[in-house]
Length: 198
Image (cartoon, rainbow, N blue to C red; front, side, top):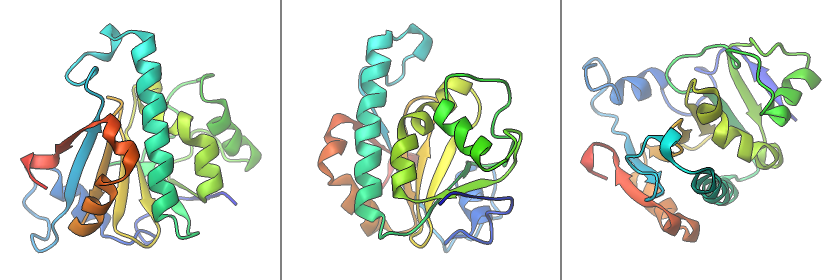
């Protein structure tokens, strides 16, 4: 089952305003008692590279590895609960231009009679996430648009998919982040802590 919701803020198991503020180093209005921990998973051969200079083979290898890791994280944390997908810091139209390279993602909008100009979040379960995994991972890179946040519906845990082909893990639960970092498939990647600490 896939649902589309305009207001994700009431559904998340964390305060989205505090989450966004925490990662904006110029915003000092957030609740300093809530600490977010984060680590960015980056493939060494594209770290610090301009992606347009990287070969298609390296890009394909990176997205393949990201997809394997993404699916393992979802499988381990899933608990049969829904996941929510939204743009990371500001809700915008899902598609800012006509695109033909993300057919599965566009199809879920069409099947639900939702325009691709929809602004809000998509709520879905593991099987749908697995079907869409490759397109979700490449969405920010292909569209050169917005990063995606994929949030668990009960755990304060976010998977951020970025246009730099990184997979960032964020949580207020430091123990949970440490547990996820021990998953086997993460060995493909460099683990770069947010703000130099974890």
